[in-house]
Image (cartoon, rainbow, N blue to C red; front, side):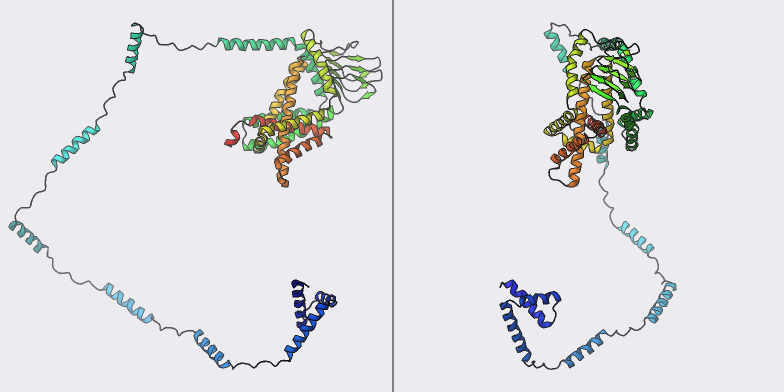
Length: 525
């Protein structure tokens, strides 16, 4: 039996002797009765208790009643209130009356004046004594001070003229045989080169627009047809989005930003549902030929491929090809119009056709046909996720990811507005170049826009993931935040509308952060 168990047994036995046991403790004693050691200790304790109870109680000491009574009496006397002092009101009243009488009584009579006696004594002492010594004259001192003041008030003497100019001229005359060196004439500004370059750029721009005008006009007609299928609310939302972005970028005051938050939400509600409803039914293929059978509720769009309308084809919308032909068999019906941009539609007199590229443009376009085919067969979702993860890794290696996340957190609406404007400036010209037949600049502009969207989305995903990691107090929030953000981006790919919305909003937000952040600006803030 250990020491701790013995102490608990003794405690239980003592409490049993006092009669203070609870039901649980009585049950514990019943269990402990099986132990021989406990039984022996219990018998010894009972024997000791009986022996102590058999002893006679000791005698009490002498009585303390008298001393306690005396102490109580002294305590009562000390606690009794002292007698009140005698009143001093009569003495105070008599002193006040005496003070009033003294103040009203006339003052004592002054003694007689002694001024005359004093004056007489002074005159007598003047007559009797010698003349007093006069003080020394201060005239020389005052004259010296006046002279110094006049000298100090004079203006400072002029500085001597510099001899550097004459000396330099003399040296030049001696070196040049006495001929004076003419002063250099200032260079005159000639605006001719700037005007020539500006005129050349304007001329090239007009020439490009003039040469590509038929393609641009056809492309504008096709776009007008597609836009007519969209609800006007989408156009209102896009105009509102661009206007609010310009306003926030021009004047990012708190009031304008509060107004911009509601305007951004309203533009998203007005734009995204109509666009998805209009183009969700359309089939878009890239780099492959399309053969249409049966009824198609929306549009048929092929980029870099041909469209073959079978006999039983019934297209309820438009048939559009970019750098491809449309072959229409007898019996095929198209509710809209057949549009072949940079292609042909043989046998269809009502089709809108633009001439395909020729010469060097044809060679360039032919070189891009395999590239469009590869793009059409590739897994776009996987490529985009890998591209986003690679850009996030580059930002981590460069140490710019935390800086960009903080900047995006400090100015969310300003960064979103700048990103929207940047993507609009990239996507619009890229679409115009593609319709004009300039595929190389259009593809470069589209690739740059895609890279910018992936980089911006990586910044937004990292910022959101890091915020969640800090909120959940996870270890290594930077690394885990990046993984959480990329996981969320990959999870949205199962829903194309959600994936497109996250890519556009997150890409624009991160793009604005890239444009707003400058070297050293984060350190200043």
